[in-house]
Structure formats: structure tokens, C-alpha cells
Length: 188
Image 1: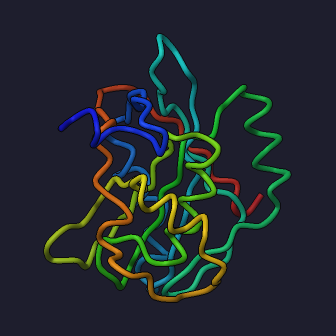
Image 2 (image 1 turned 90 degrees about the horizontal axis):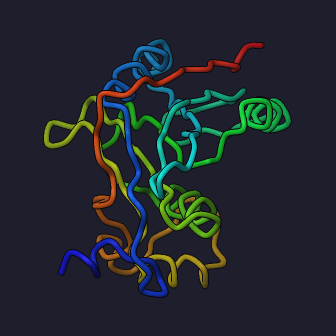
């Protein structure tokens, strides 16, 4: 049922996340040079809670290094300072899979766990421009996925049993014609 599909590990109903319709296009524009070189890019989705809904208002591209299958952020103090100055909550993350399909890798699952354990409504957006079946996905971990990843002690790329049962299309996200501020602090 819809309630179970949009619930947390403890069965609580997830609050809605309002996502600006043009976020992914603006993010891909900023990621274009990396994407052309087959290098992943990531951004942090930030916003505010209003009327019991999370509104994504800002996407911050922090200092980072990337390769064809992963990206690592650096200088988190710049990200935190910007979020504090604008009074922004962390609501999830977005990243590219420039040469891969649209899915959550084992590293992505562990990254999403760290976001979702802090905020059950946190989302992971994957942009996969070369995937012929699906170029973007908005995901969150299932209750089973949260339990499996919590108990997993492996790092790097590694297999999980039944990976398709560990995450799902995030059913609590609504697209809206709201403004998104892009803050690219990668080179500053």
C-alpha cells in the first residue's frame, strides 16, 4: 500500500520533499565538463522545513574529486559554513553516473544510508545521461535496505544480496515550479 511504500524503518509516514522541476537540468549544466570526460559530479541538496514539508531550495556543489565511478567531497567546512549562513538543512544529494546506468551502487547505498539515518526523508538523485532506459532516478533506501546497510561492514564496491530490494523510487517527492539556487563552490 502507499503508506508502507513511503514509510521509515519504524513505520512512520515520510513527510513530502518538494523538488524544483529545473534542478536536474541546472545540475547537469554545471556537471557538463566532468560528464564529457566521464567523471562523476555530486551536489548536496539543501532546503527548509515549512508546513511539515521539506522544500529543496539550494544545491551546493562542494569541492570534490571524481573518477568514472565515484566522487569524493573535500573541504566540508566550506559546505557547512554556507549551510549555516543560509540556515539550510541537508535533504539529500545528487550525482552523475556519466558512463553507467541509473541505479545506486554499493558505495551509493552506504552514502545514502548516512543521509537517511539522519533524516528519513533524505533522497538520492542519480543522473545517468548515457542510460538508454532511464536517465534520472530519485531514490531512497527501503526499510530492508536501511537494516542491511546498517549491518554491512564492507567498504568500496561490493555486492549486496538482492540489491533491488534495498532501494526504491522515492514516493514522497513532488516536483514543483519553485526556484533552485545553485551554489558551485568547487573551485573557490
